[in-house]
Image (cartoon, rainbow, N blue to C red; front, side, top):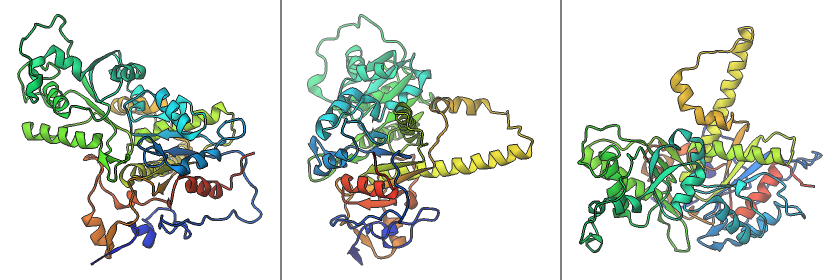
Amino acid sequence: MRRALPPLRAVLGGGAAGRPPRLPALSGLCGRTAGTPAAEGGSKLNILPSFGFLFDIDGVLVRGKTPIPAAKTAFQKLVNSQGHFVVPVVFVTNAGNCLRQKKADQLSHLLGVPVSQDQVMMSHSPLRMFKRYHEKCVLVSGQGPLLDIAQDLGFCQPITIETLREKHPLLDAVDHERRPNILYPSAVELPKIEAVVLFGEPVRWETNLQLIIDVLLTSGYPGNPYHHESYPHIPVLACNMDLMWVAEAQSPRFGHGTFMVCLENIYKKITGKDLKYEALMGKPSKVTYQYAEYLIRAQAAERQWKQPIQTLYAVGDNLMTDIYGANLYNRYLEENSRKGSKSRIQAKAAGGRGSAAVSQDDEIDNSWENELASAAAAHCRSVLVCTGVYNPHTEVPLDTRESITDTVFHGHRDFRFDPGLVEPDHIVPDVDAAVDLVFQLENFAPS
């Protein structure tokens, strides 16, 4: 038997182990205005922020190209009379089909506040840290100004799927109308492709799937015959794992995660082996939140706010990306804090001598993390809004154990489903209510 209830067991009862208790006033019933906790009596209001906002865009601020009404109201509270933000704000989107400046201009127009490109984090933004690929010839897949995006990120030799198709016209054979009638020899031979970068969902999926598979199964020489012994294949870096996203349509639309499912299954069907990723970027990956925190700290430093940023509030509409990612990063921050405390105790016991032994593998794997510097925040709190993917009226089983086993996991293949990671810390109707909630939780009153 099933009944219509908010589909989150933490709202119905206790939260997951180790998670902070939910506020009783926030029932999770998004259809009505939720109350917020009042500031503690006699406590001093904070005029400098010790927190920052990470805002998702689609489903939180806009639906397609249409602004969500609560967004403008919310952002009037986040800027002062001079148009400056009163708290650090980063827009963290899994979109990847444009440059940061274009997205900043769009947000400025939609929200009625000045947004700079340094406040915008696209799903591909962390690729700036993967410098070992910047000098290599890489195949890029997606849509929009791909070459401009790749070069802005630091890639010196990007090649698009369309360029590869032009050089090897026999490879794209699904659409009979696009098959060449006359073959001309290519005047310029392409260099070996040493990595594949998936920026987002492409327009012609059959062409992209075919040519990417060709590159993987020929070790970067797609005109050659397949040789299955080349495994592991050349590196694949993927951005944006969203299976679906919300636009103006009544139901969610296919996202880049759906394209990745196709690519992974085709590769495995042909080779019998799993497609492997060198890196996965975009929510819910840890590197995305690390980079977002880096941008938050940079804003605070630029504004000369002396108060350390202790808490990040991630506001989103998707349980499997926004909430999962924020909670995953919160888990990382708390583990990092415990390890830091343990290391300090051990160093003190050893007379202040820390461990100098760092393996070469660790040094290589963490090279991009070193550029971001160590995490400084103590917590990352997840705030779910009900204006996008999340549906508060979904039917759920009465038995929560059945709910867990029956859950269809929309996250990426390489992320393990953990029920505790899809439980938001707070549920509110919209982004305006989210801003009000956080201001009261932080006892914050900007000057």
